[in-house]
Image (tube, rainbow, N blue to C red):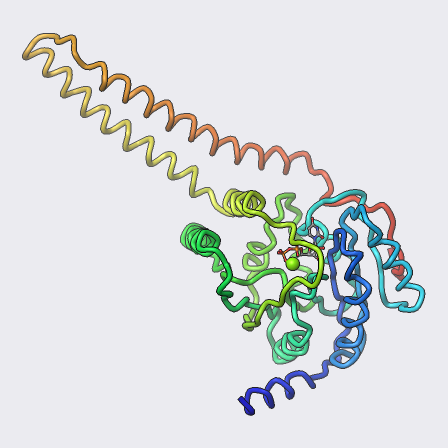
Length: 327
Ligand code: UDP
Ligand code: MG
């Protein structure tokens, strides 16, 4: 225990010579954004030579922007990007990644769930030669079985079908250097499944376990519907496995029906025609109808993906930004 504490203190006192850009996506966080920036500021002063805090307002409808603007008056290194509406966290992060001026970048939530003591640990890994260091959530007992099983299943599919190892239990909480940052900037896709993108770019990465803190105020925007949506978008933007499965199922069904057809035909030739057979016909029609609709649905997901990519709309639109030297 004492050893662990010492170790933690040693890590906490680590100081890096980097210029760190902290990217903080926010949406309706007026209750905690001031406290968050003040405390982040104190932590960063201790562990890094220079830093900027880029707050991306993702279409807040409360007073978040006003609070940040008030902080900017006394904290010159706090920068603000106001998106024109709510684009979602992944797009807000993308805006931050595009605007970061530092030689390394920290992605962190504004709700205190990502503990600050991890920042020096991440920086230490970067200084030791890693291109990216990310937080791995330690399992919490209060998570529902549905969520645990669902996420296990999702990561297994992703791993086996894409060949890319997306680490389970790793979120956006991470620090990366300029090379990894440039790699992310070079990915123009509209469907931004960031967890997949961090893994796809490769480079030398390391995961460090941490205990997720409770949200300090307000509520998480995630629910089962949104999680399922994210999983679907992750799968369809990273692998064509579902399309291949549909092809395989189609092939198996055609083969079985062909064999059955040969059997029915030979029976009719040998024994003459028989009227019964309604149940078989109905089962075959409904079953095949179901498979066809399912296949169409899967195709539709991919076509919708193509549709949104070919339109080449920007990933986000900025209403205003303040505090930046360039741009
Ligand atoms: N967030 C955002 N846009 C959104 C939803 C969330 O910028 O549409 C921000 C939010 O303000 C917070 C971070 O993303 O700083 C994480 O959000 P949340 O706590 O709701 O997600 P969870 O921690 O449950 O994954
Ligand atoms: Mg949160």
